[in-house]
Image 1 (cartoon, rainbow, N blue to C red):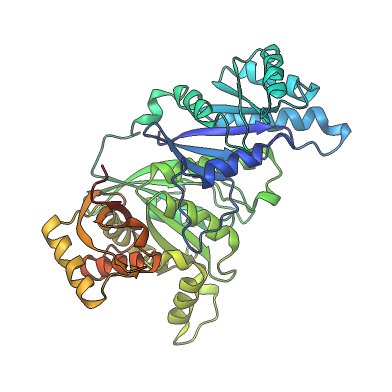
Image 2 (image 1 turned 90 degrees about the vertical axis):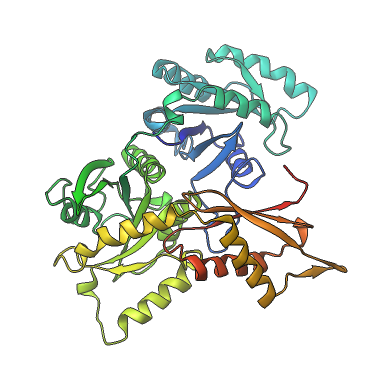
Length: 441
């Protein structure tokens, strides 16, 4: 099933966004500050007690006006309940229990989903005493926290992870020979048409109305003796345009589909070009360590000359600077142009994502790289790289043992990554480099 999903629910001004941002950007989160990845997001991938999970900001309880309070509360609570494995319900210790809190708690109790109750802004003895009032909500023990001051977050994460279903820790398929492929992108870019061509049947409804596909659809296919599982997902809209509860539900499904996949086909509209939402969507796949192929659809509608493909690719690299490694395939779902190439590219990228390099060969490449461009120095100390080892695949992850980790400048780390790509390829896959002191465990 992939990572467990934790949906955050709460009224405005209870500190929900502050808590979400702490999880997204602090050390407990494994989301990296990768240049070019938009940081305004509705998800955060985190890790606690060796367990990865996805935290989704559902938008909370958005009360538009007094006439729509009851409807808004019910819709928002239902969105969170529909797809999440655990509900994180955030309240405010300073205001105490409100009517809105009580109404949401009632709906959550009926859901039978695991609920963790966080009472935020409990950063003084007075507020800590006020926490006991929240037992009256009837959804379990309230956990006092202060998102702003990072108080009680460890206890909160303990409680969340404890409620994860066991199935979330296991793979949804034992077939290691099968390549799972998720098609992602904004609505109306042609994902469903490409999906139908790849699987050879009208499996997903094709319509020119944006957002037709609501759920993730799985279809197993065998091509040239290779097994694929194609996952068509709902188009992801900008948060400001996600008005229907079913649209937010679909976004959560799409993110889960990325987690389940080995390779992601990021479908881009050739005419519209790259949007900020495209960067957010593919940024999630990049951070999740998935193999990525950029698929530029509707190429038949783009006005071209002899250099169009080259210039378009250059612009893509400038727009999505963190995806220099991703191959670009230009297709037309309408005319079926080049779609037959996608299975071959998918298989190649999956191999690159799962590649393992022998330690001796790896260290020879790093040694040569250091000879060409010596490691940086700082305040009289020069960085020494002792050795490098690959610790995992999907994505390829390397631990670099050095004398002074703090001297490893980002630019030099990127230089080493580029040298690894020159030597071994790793086309279509991100690379993780972990810098450690020699005496660190």
